[in-house]
Image (cartoon, rainbow, N blue to C red; front, side, top):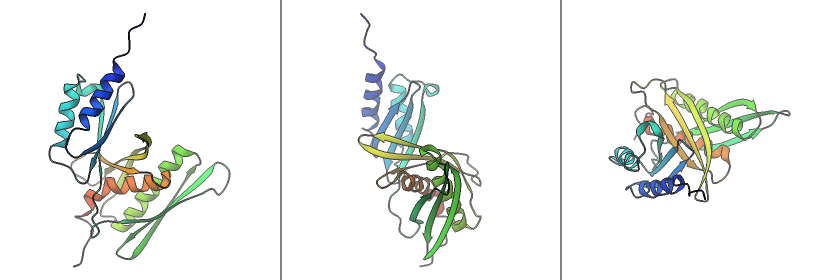
Length: 210
């Protein structure tokens, strides 16, 4: 008789342990390696990354045995936040799709388009790239971003989109992770995930007049 696999129970205990950290809304632990996504409320809670890594280590997983990504659901910042107006997906011909993202900053609209193959995975990516293009128009070249990856997840009966970006001008090379609930479409979720990843850097670059 085969013995029960202890790995799912280990991952479930780890998920529950991570969700016990103050400021963590929920966690996702999946895959054989595994991939660990920790989703936090608002801005970065003090010490949350150290707490996450400590609890992963306590579970018996070494640092090289898991991929950990920590993201933050951005708190409202009406005076320093670029707003998403709309994301649209068009299909000019069979097998092709065009994503259009429109952002608003200080009453002005900024629009960018990105074309690629049709299909859920590529459409998610071109929606994110169109958002980065519109955001770089807002910033007028002061910052540029690259999209490392984007992925749709289903966790706890919620559709999520996770975006991983990098800022080309940042002296500290660290990933910027953004997460959004996909309450309308996955394309809009992709755009919001990109904005949630980048908004924490924008305060020093977007001019505000009182």
